[in-house]
Image (cartoon, each protein chain N blue to C red):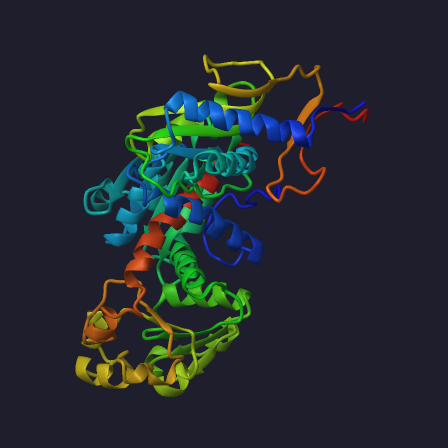
Length: 181
Length: 309
């Protein structure tokens, strides 16, 4: 059976909480930049941007990175069927960059994203915000801001639907059992 | 969505479908962005070996391939004819066997003989990219031109494109015509009768021997390089006469669309096939082509290096 872990209103509450936590941790938003990890992290990053603007009255810059080119299995997994350009439209130098993803598991994606961000300059600090931490780390990586720790049974999938259009009922986090086939 | 690149080599544009071409160009967009970052390098092809085997002199194509490989973190080695054992009399076959023993992942070859790249691809166990073979094909040039056109016009489909100059001897003209006609473009070729060989219509192009009607209403003007040695030969009049009849100037561009772009694969003979003020104008995409060249070649190296099977 599919199980809903987070509903729309919980996702909204978590987003607000993480936005506040970012402001507290960094001490303001003047030098904060958000970078979503394509594709799952982009929508969450955009929502965080909206919350930060509501809370602090400033629009923090928003970027996105595509980590296909930085994967540690690039040599065997190539070619990725579809790679998109990264887009970091602000100077990361001296900024507090908050990497944003929907799910944190092995940590390999985050490692690749860190490497990618560093190719744009030298941030003061890189933080990590995720909606769900499902455990199973394969690298020594931890998130600074976590929405919910989720235990996912073997063989099940964790599906995060964070739609930026914000339609009613369109946002949720679901554990989907593997198809019996 | 899970459309992989279904080709082991890139030897000509003929086997590429519309989807394949768009796939290459979309991938190139990602690499285009990489080349504009503070750190213009990604670790994607770490540990891969690429050999650039150049039997014909070429600066820009070779440098473009070399940069593309390096920006992907691959190890790139250049072998030029003048410095290699070819000048000591080694045959292509033996050179290729030697290279094969070095276990490259990709070999990029430019050769004066049509079919050389094809031959090498059959002999080698790795991916091969044709960087120009005789008067036959130059697929990466056609792809980078397509990338430039798509960026400038927003599409590749149903455009009018005039290719001007030494059509008979040009692999650039041939590959571009083949690629653009796949997208339903109205491709016209124009040049002196002596440089238009019979049978060009088989490429699906319209043939003109006067510039003005050829440029009528076109979106893109592709100017080809006139080789100076041919100007001295029997096929062409003097430089000045060629310039008067076929040189691209603001006057000759008058019949093209007002926002038509002008392209040239380089190196340019200013004052012969293209006037300096056109070459340096806003309509000229010559430098965009150079930038596109690195991005498109990165995309091809990326798409071909992954073929581990």
